[in-house]
Image (cartoon, rainbow, N blue to C red; front, top):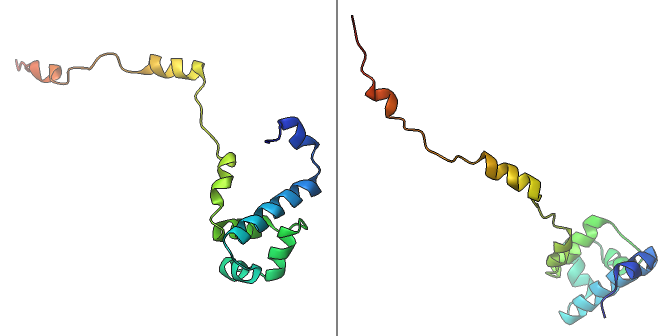
Length: 115
Protein backbone atom coordinates (compact mmCIF):
# COMPACT_ATOMS: atom_id res chain seq x y z
CA UNK A 1 0.00 0.00 0.00
CA UNK A 2 1.32 3.43 -0.94
CA UNK A 3 1.91 6.04 1.74
CA UNK A 4 -0.07 9.26 1.82
CA UNK A 5 1.61 12.66 2.02
CA UNK A 6 0.85 12.87 5.73
CA UNK A 7 2.49 9.50 6.37
CA UNK A 8 5.63 10.56 4.47
CA UNK A 9 5.94 13.72 6.56
CA UNK A 10 5.41 11.74 9.74
CA UNK A 11 8.20 9.29 8.83
CA UNK A 12 11.50 10.00 10.55
CA UNK A 13 14.66 10.66 8.57
CA UNK A 14 16.16 7.42 9.86
CA UNK A 15 13.14 5.42 8.70
CA UNK A 16 13.41 7.01 5.24
CA UNK A 17 17.11 6.07 5.11
CA UNK A 18 16.16 2.53 6.11
CA UNK A 19 13.55 2.35 3.32
CA UNK A 20 16.06 3.59 0.74
CA UNK A 21 18.61 1.09 2.02
CA UNK A 22 16.09 -1.75 1.83
CA UNK A 23 15.24 -0.74 -1.74
CA UNK A 24 18.92 -0.76 -2.72
CA UNK A 25 19.59 -4.10 -1.06
CA UNK A 26 16.49 -5.74 -2.48
CA UNK A 27 17.28 -4.48 -5.98
CA UNK A 28 20.88 -5.68 -5.74
CA UNK A 29 19.83 -9.12 -4.54
CA UNK A 30 17.19 -9.43 -7.29
CA UNK A 31 20.00 -8.83 -9.78
CA UNK A 32 22.09 -11.47 -7.98
CA UNK A 33 25.01 -9.09 -7.40
CA UNK A 34 27.28 -8.88 -4.37
CA UNK A 35 28.07 -5.64 -2.56
CA UNK A 36 31.63 -5.96 -3.83
CA UNK A 37 30.50 -6.26 -7.48
CA UNK A 38 28.18 -3.29 -7.21
CA UNK A 39 30.77 -1.19 -5.37
CA UNK A 40 33.43 -1.88 -7.99
CA UNK A 41 31.05 -1.03 -10.86
CA UNK A 42 29.97 2.18 -9.08
CA UNK A 43 33.50 3.21 -8.21
CA UNK A 44 32.79 3.34 -4.48
CA UNK A 45 33.94 1.36 -1.47
CA UNK A 46 32.09 -1.82 -0.48
CA UNK A 47 31.58 -0.42 3.03
CA UNK A 48 29.77 2.57 1.48
CA UNK A 49 27.33 0.17 -0.18
CA UNK A 50 26.81 -1.54 3.17
CA UNK A 51 26.25 1.79 4.93
CA UNK A 52 23.66 2.87 2.37
CA UNK A 53 21.88 -0.48 2.51
CA UNK A 54 21.81 -0.41 6.32
CA UNK A 55 20.34 3.09 6.42
CA UNK A 56 23.48 4.67 7.88
CA UNK A 57 23.59 7.36 5.26
CA UNK A 58 26.15 8.24 2.66
CA UNK A 59 26.58 10.95 0.10
CA UNK A 60 24.09 11.82 -2.57
CA UNK A 61 26.79 11.12 -5.15
CA UNK A 62 27.28 7.58 -3.80
CA UNK A 63 23.53 7.01 -3.94
CA UNK A 64 23.41 8.19 -7.56
CA UNK A 65 26.35 5.97 -8.53
CA UNK A 66 24.67 3.00 -6.89
CA UNK A 67 21.31 3.72 -8.56
CA UNK A 68 23.08 3.98 -11.93
CA UNK A 69 24.82 0.60 -11.52
CA UNK A 70 21.56 -1.00 -10.41
CA UNK A 71 19.80 0.64 -13.40
CA UNK A 72 17.36 2.37 -11.08
CA UNK A 73 17.87 6.02 -12.08
CA UNK A 74 14.24 6.24 -13.27
CA UNK A 75 13.19 6.47 -9.60
CA UNK A 76 14.44 10.04 -9.83
CA UNK A 77 11.63 11.00 -12.21
CA UNK A 78 9.75 12.37 -9.22
CA UNK A 79 12.33 15.17 -9.14
CA UNK A 80 11.74 16.33 -12.71
CA UNK A 81 10.41 19.86 -12.91
CA UNK A 82 7.46 20.15 -15.26
CA UNK A 83 7.26 23.52 -16.94
CA UNK A 84 3.65 24.58 -16.93
CA UNK A 85 2.23 27.70 -18.48
CA UNK A 86 -0.47 29.38 -16.46
CA UNK A 87 -3.77 30.14 -18.21
CA UNK A 88 -3.02 33.88 -17.99
CA UNK A 89 0.40 33.45 -19.62
CA UNK A 90 -1.16 31.24 -22.29
CA UNK A 91 -3.77 33.91 -23.04
CA UNK A 92 -1.04 36.57 -23.32
CA UNK A 93 0.97 34.36 -25.69
CA UNK A 94 -2.12 33.77 -27.84
CA UNK A 95 -2.76 37.51 -27.95
CA UNK A 96 0.81 38.16 -29.10
CA UNK A 97 0.55 35.69 -32.00
CA UNK A 98 0.55 37.27 -35.42
CA UNK A 99 -2.89 37.48 -36.96
CA UNK A 100 -1.87 38.64 -40.43
CA UNK A 101 1.14 38.45 -42.68
CA UNK A 102 2.63 41.66 -44.00
CA UNK A 103 3.12 41.89 -47.74
CA UNK A 104 6.84 42.39 -48.23
CA UNK A 105 6.39 43.00 -51.96
CA UNK A 106 4.29 46.10 -51.29
CA UNK A 107 7.35 48.31 -50.92
CA UNK A 108 8.78 47.11 -54.25
CA UNK A 109 5.54 48.00 -56.08
CA UNK A 110 6.09 51.69 -55.45
CA UNK A 111 8.14 53.10 -58.28
CA UNK A 112 10.59 55.84 -57.68
CA UNK A 113 9.90 59.00 -59.59
CA UNK A 114 12.94 61.04 -60.47
CA UNK A 115 12.06 64.65 -61.33
